[in-house]
Image 1 (cartoon, rainbow, N blue to C red):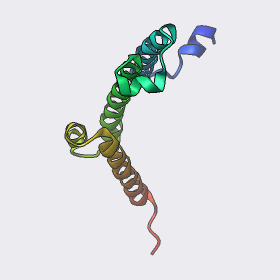
Image 2 (image 1 turned 60 degrees about the vertical axis):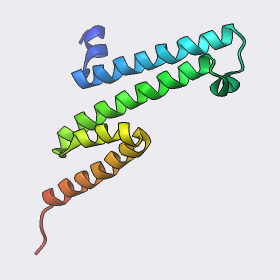
Image 3 (image 1 turned 90 degrees about the vertical axis):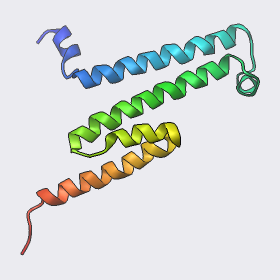
Length: 123
């Protein structure tokens, strides 16, 4: 097996989507972080005074939210969960900090239900 095929093995389209989101998150946040470092800004103070740190935090949270929504759709479909759109839509009305953990809780329920349905019944 060649070195290139070893490096590229197991990269599914989903894995590539998450990798691209990771790179966007790194570049997006660190662009603002570098600006803050070059300008010698107080990073934590900037969060409250609208400096480059706010842009970094905004990018950080935005990429996390997009990645969470992608995971909701991908994992939810894999498990056959319904109404996945509601987690994403309600994240805009409430918060992704609410809907993502809610999805994870229901995901665990779906995994448990699947495990119980596949277990042999003892009679």
